[in-house]
Picture 1: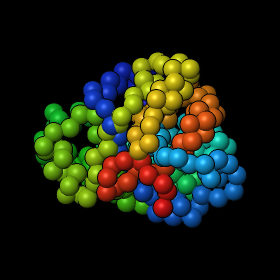
Picture 2: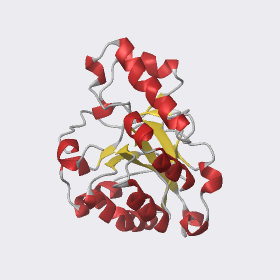
Picture 3: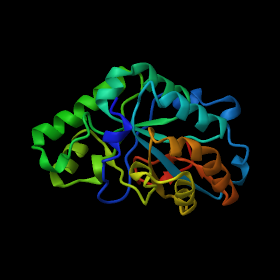
Amino acid sequence: MRITPHLSKRSPVTGLAVAALAVASTVAFTGNATPSHAATCNGYVGLTFDDGPSNAHTPSLLGALRQNGLRATMFNEGQYAAAYPSQVRAEAGAGMWIGNHSYTHPHLTQESQAQVDSEISRTQQAIANAGGGTPKLFRPPYGETNATVQSVEAKYGLRQIIWDVDSQDWNGAGTDAIVQANARLTNGQIILMHEWPANTLAAIPRIAQTLASKGLCAGMISPQTGRAVAPS
């Protein structure tokens, strides 16, 4: 797993996000994970976490999300899905959706079509092999995309997901700033977060409270529209 100092250098260029449905995740999402404010959902937002999975961060993040009644889309890198298949299964079992975030997190716009195809196809296979289902959503690393990337996405039936709000957690944002970024979300919008920053983990309870105060619930990202919608 790439450690925080390396990951913190990632600089998303534009905004939006990619995610995908994990087979069986809906069935597995039970117990105290159900949002207490579900009856008052006036809209849905897409919480997304990039760069997993890992033994170091995924369990704590999943625990915090479940304890606070939140579901999210986990944009997994293929190399980590292959290395930590039990964490992919844990994501699906916790009711999360799993998306494709490339295999090694390169700048895809600088890659050949064959290289882009390899990055995407190997990740599709790694996530499926680990028990996370076949992703329907793709988030290009750094939010960088072009016609070549989009043609390969289409080949694998993937919806490209960028983000509406960047939490800046990758750039050292504090917990307050991460909570405030989530507070800017409106119905259908998507926020970029990552699984490894400690401040993001610390923000989860307050994110849940903030969304509830606005009548918003954590939803799934529709492969049809690319927007956050009620979980199916």
